[in-house]
Length: 323
Image 1 (cartoon, rainbow, N blue to C red):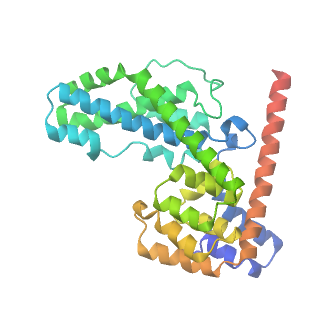
Image 2: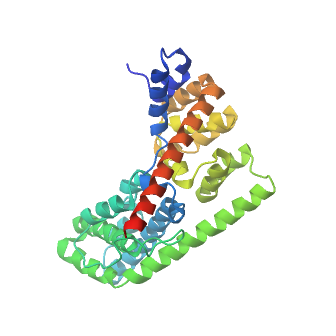
Image 3: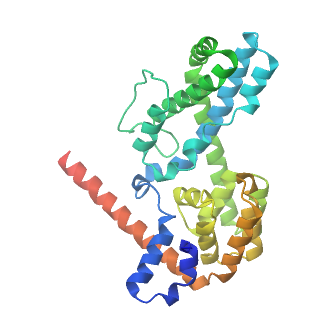
């Protein structure tokens, strides 16, 4: 059976040649890499966190509008309950891998998975900034969620009634989109300010990380990890979405996180259906991983990031010169 990247990193000193060791480091750090448009761009520094929080807030508001429309149309209680709580969120289908996709890739996915719609917007995404998603992405996100729920409800109430319902919620589009963006922005601003204040008081400890995760204060948890790991938010989200926990183990060991805190952290993701065998496996590997090997992997990753950031800066300068 072939060994995982983390298992190969543990044995990196046994590699025969420097090229073999470099291959190990590249394979290991591949799980830390994000889409190229995340590197070297200030306006993209919080994009993935903003996208996630906006999608969540939009989903919550769209469900409430759907439920209200169903009640007004005389739908049965079971159908209203289905719309409010029993239908799985459509967000998981794209958010888990969003950091590995450019904004254009994300937009293309939302469009492909949505009903046709006449949505105008700036295809250069110039109307977005650090705390504002581009309008095209916001409105196609709404269209994607609306399409998902229309299809799900059509099995319960029939295609004709579900089409009527879709037209009803379309009238709420602008308010739902705007409200979701405001809620997401405020959550991020407050969490970032809170964690920054903790940092000034040197109050971000290993135990605080575990407590934040246990309390499901995920936005604060992400910002705290950004500081502890010295990552950007996109990389932090990528690491947290690694269901093998291998990249998290490497980052934690490089930051000299205690085993007990690492164990509490991975157990905090039990809702992802990680079984006990997986937990035992990663803790065993965490014990075997030398700090020096983990730190070496992180140095290699930072060099890769610097090279990509420099390449992106040069590309932007060349584009500006020819534009």
